[in-house]
View (cartoon, rainbow, N blue to C red):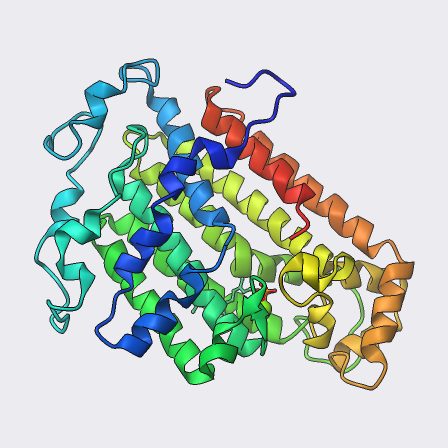
Length: 399
Ligand code: FPP
Ligand code: MG
Ligand code: MG
């Protein structure tokens, strides 16, 4: 346990667990069609931050610490770590996850020669990691969250006409829109199979809802405001609408996967599950607010993706909305999605002369603080410190 003031590196805590993530994901994404195989795996080769799987793994560890009364991290690891593949009734596992995942029950049309989903050994490779406090199902959940996120990026880059992603060519630039969209659909399909194989209806429902929420958020974003007027005025509802969109687009995946991680743990109380959800919801909102702020404050090179892109895309995000509150003239620009000559420059100028960026940072800080409070009920552990550190990192990040 880190003493107060000494920072822990969340990446180090679950670093070993994350090592196999991209490899496991590629195993889930194998296709007999060489081109589909290539496009589907394209973003798994770039250096993503793996924020979502990292949170799932930390939450799995931190909530395991909630149930440590009879078998704990004080215990010698060896008693649990070797038993996971042989003992299906081990007290550390509510059910034997290796059975459903490796069962020959596969999609009717899966090609046994080419689909890794039909090769149990390959499929399970790395799923049993080193920490006995993380269950195989929770590791698989971490992979599923990254798959859903990556699918949404493939589609998002088509919608946003993005040229770069993670400092490289975006998939749509590299392979064209049609293949990028289809690859995203393929990822969702494989994520769904892996999800079904967790054999937990509540977790399936949560993650399926996330997929619907991502689309709902993206649809809300197509319009900047609830009203469809050419000259919208700023109201309290403007911010509410933006936050609802932000929840759906970003915080839903983070909050529901944190909740699912707690649900997959053994004997977690409803209070623990609720705390995991609340942490994810608040951190997710902070995360997107910071993202929207960085779009105004960092260079494209630092960001790894085009900066200042939101206005160009016609999007009014938090910094602009807060500026709009005191600059009613922005309404006309919002109404026409910054589409007239000079609109983008004018809007950017008004935002930078206002306190919009600072208000955004303050609101993000409020949510980050709420995320930290949500998990105060967890017993002290390295993973809990890691979750707290993730809130600090979210506020400090530049990319
Ligand atoms: C990135 O936002 C995009 C998202 C957080 C979600 C996008 C969701 C869809 C495209 C709906 C379809 C969903 C699925 C699961 C297929 P951004 O454009 O603000 O961020 P960026 O700067 O990283 O591109
Ligand atoms: Mg985008
Ligand atoms: Mg987008």
